[in-house]
Image 1 (cartoon, helix red, strand yellow):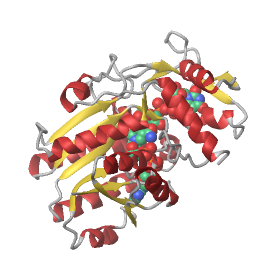
Image 2 (tube, rainbow, N blue to C red):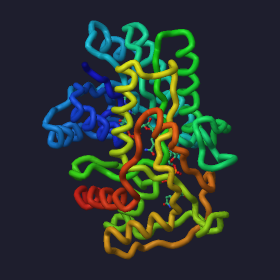
Image 3 (tube, helix red, strand yellow):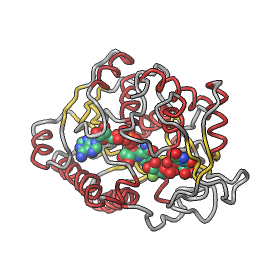
Length: 338
Ligand code: NAD
Ligand code: UFG
């Protein structure tokens, strides 16, 4: 039983590949290495003992995608991670994001239809909820107007799959991630941000290791207990395990609708200052940070209602914020100032 993982050398994809292999699935990775490196496959092998089959393919290249699927009848299901994910970059270059995330996905889905591959797990994001009217957000909370082209590509992806599920035999599980962080316990795989990180945790660890001078907290005048934004940080290994459970649910025919949606978070909201405190606690270091102005586009607070994922998917996050900070820090120490 082979599972195709697009974006499988990326951050969340690589952790998912390891979990899949450890559950006995044979994995094929398809990635164009636009935001990852081939050495990840060696590190996956070091963890699981199995080198995944790898194909360097750009999903935007329709002819190459079709050629890949031609004569292949060994793929049972697809987990689709491949996409660009930088919010700010998407604002500056929307066409790049629509082309990569939407055209790439359409090429993939066309090829799946042509080859009768009908099980699909999709990486979505809590960004679809925007500034939620009430917290925690459930899967039925309204999808708000997207704040960025990136966010819109996630909504378009969900809509395409919803439309498809009504007329084709495609079965889909949409997973809406909250804020993924942390790294594998082995420190062999983790997040590799290219350039200056936008995200909080890589910025913290790069500051601690001396690659960045100081972390700026984006505003402390929000209507939250300590004035900083609240997010639901989720360990990447917990997230990876949810993909294996979602896949198994479809393979076992336990899914109840052609398209199902699950929030993937811990259900806990933590402020930026709480994340910094947790980092300082596990690392024993004092982090150099200052309070700066608000960042445009940030929602004040968001965290998940996990009831549906807990009860229906049968998945629950197990790892806490300290664990996320410790594994992120161990990973940063292993890669150094990269
Ligand atoms: P990542 O950049 O580490 O991984 C994405 C992988 O996809 C990379 O290896 C990249 O080379 C590959 N890729 C991109 N475009 C491609 C294309 N056209 N053809 C083939 N390969 C391509 O990102 P990640 O953090 O692992 O995110 C994975 C998925 O999860 C993305 O769809 C992202 O939108 C979604 N997501 C991420 C977050 C987050 O904070 N990391 C939050 C919510 C949702
Ligand atoms: N923050 C800082 N300083 C920094 C970086 C971030 O204070 O240097 C703050 C942000 O302002 C925010 C919090 O830390 O309050 C978290 O910011 P991130 O950029 O780490 O995460 P976001 O919640 O903004 O966005 C992330 C992903 C998006 C995704 C979204 C929802 O980056 O791709 O979660 O899933 F869409």
